[in-house]
Length: 465
Image 1: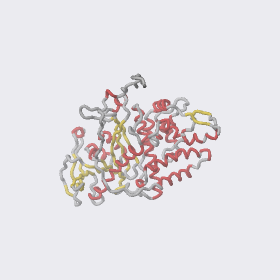
Image 2: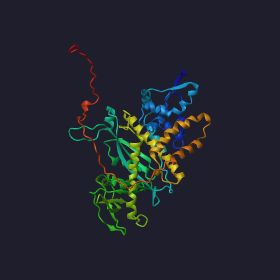
Image 3: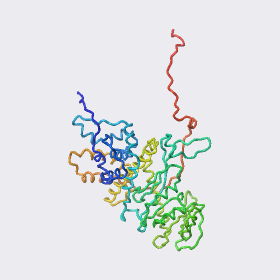
């Protein structure tokens, strides 16, 4: 059998054909508008135009364990397979060329595209998405290890460590706002590690309105959070740290009581006054011991929002933790999630990652709506595998006068088949089990200071008799 000779040509493809499988979530015109609004378009014709780089950064979240060159190959696989009968093969650009194109594109186009696309989707018919007519929203934050380069370390900074030890990697902080009933991240803010979580969370309150009930953990509790949500005409339900005390002003029939929260020193100088709130105290038994929890809210109507209802529904805040698990564990299967070595590309990659998660969750929401079930009952990992198969499949049908509605219906049906069993009611302790190592801790003097490989030398000690 003789092998055919293929002619290699540059990968000149129409970038608008790359993510046809996601065109219902991110239309091609929306990407074009984001490029124009941020003045990120290329000044001359290039093999790697800005539109292609935007789709490539989004695709990095779908094939996170692959190299950037392999991600590019996966992204154009459907179009390149159409050239096989013509004995043509696309030439893949080098990783350095892709890096230069990413640096030229910048991060503004990705942040702008996320702002244009990310919106709440749940309706009143979506199970678990509303409480008393209010859309349940949750807020949380996390940090990510990023590659240790001089620029990343200077911009993002290191966390603290014990005396005599050094932190392993610089860290970027991400605070996000998620729709609890669908796991759709509708707003996010990326910042250096030294910028606290509370300060970053205040910036996300721009997306809160009067139809939303915002839930947060005790780490985000502050007068500024309460005051900012009220200014946005939103509603809140948050957990209170144990050291915070409240005065009992009036006890309600359901066991909760009215109190007030005093402004901090900075807010008081700006003329802020104390705010009336409602405190809900309840007891949970954990491992045979009783533990008291306290919630703070502005919902004073005990007939529509009794204490038992709010206490039982507060567990919806943990949907933010489950969303974080999808992001850091299932969507990015890397030891160091972020691969970019420059700060602008770090932000670019994070927002591309958020866009990838939004596309996936949006398709899951549409599939669940047609099946009349909760979007949280569909497998996230299984849906990710469906998207990986669908991207090249949509591209292969371009020459066959692609009927986008037919293939989109197939995509939704594939995802709707991924219903998972009901969750088990269980909780896991926040503990980490790390193995001991016989090696000493790595210090900064050991970094980028590898010893040269020694040459082999042979010497005859005695001759064989």
